[in-house]
Length: 114
Length: 111
Image (cartoon, rainbow over the protein chains, first blue to last red):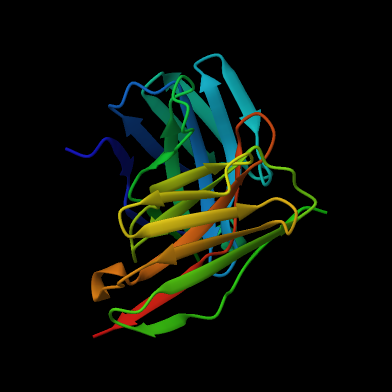
């Protein structure tokens, strides 16, 4: 089983709809992240969480919100989706006690807003 | 402003040759730099980390260099194979162990 899972894997939604993307991990990591990826722009950080009670905005948080329901679960919401939020969304985790600081990514959610 | 540059054009090389990818940055002083591999439709996978006080790091056929004066990292794959074809992302530490990613370079290794 994958260590970091994301649901759904693909989603098409209409402008103005609320949508939630979910991320779960079995790695026992304390830190979790949400990124979006657009062609040629690399990964951009939306929100991150260092533990259940710690939520922080990233580079591009406008139009998004998150919830850290448990150490293993971190969800991303688009309150009112707009077409320029069409992108590939990745959840990632890391272990603050690990000196390599590597991040482990989920398989991604392809979101299309029409 | 802070900026990370990776060649957006695909790098095409012949199998067996050494692939060299470049990551340049400005207005950063990262404590470390990481390289990730990303295959189509998948999330990035961590490959290597190199710290600011290290000039070179190796792992099997991979080698990374880090020149903090030039503000550049080079990523080498020796004896490249078609299976090495992917997009490679560099990521810089940006305060508090957060990462900022470059746009990635696509590598195509032809048999």
